[in-house]
Image (cartoon, rainbow, N blue to C red; front, side):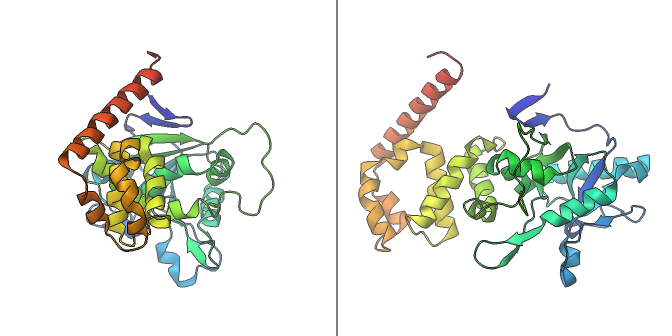
Length: 304
């Protein structure tokens, strides 16, 4: 049974077979030993002026032109690489009635833009490890534009299969030159999706990571960078892990509140700040965090 994650993202059972539509492939992750693509017609997504970087671009395969045997091969590859956590060759399954050239041209047009710092950027939004986070980061109007001629976008994340439906807009969107592109406030999150994923995996422990705390982790990583001025990515991830695990009890801890100015000034390391906490401090934060989660769960289920 479908499990809603948050409209319009839904977790579904893994496909038993590819139907119609299109697959988005990342040739950079192609291992010819695992997948023979020689019989497939790859429609490259090439932005204008990409030049020598054409090999970095994704490609679209029209499933209507693929034999049943090759369809099954591609499905096996998608399932195997998701189970192993490999960088994906099979990035997405798009549902669209548009011709393949329209689909590939639209994806190509979305790949490049500004980094909001005076330079140009390549946005690997089609990679499911990135796209999963775009579903909560981008506004509906951006996501509507990003999907373009596709009605839905299926992808594997954390070993499971998800489908994202193109958002329905109540009114016609404003005419903008690149309505899908992340704005200046969103771009830092785009650049740290790998760090967000690492923290989500860390706090999940033996369980599968969830997108439920992605916004919290993103906010904590930004705070670690912009306010605490933690220069090491490992320190920023470490701080965000504690924020996600303990929540407000960690952020409001008096000893840490007293230490943060010294950390921000470079006079104290994160490790030293955390070392100021006693075992009783950690235990109290754990109890308070558990209590806060219980209250939140009861409110969510209407028990309070």
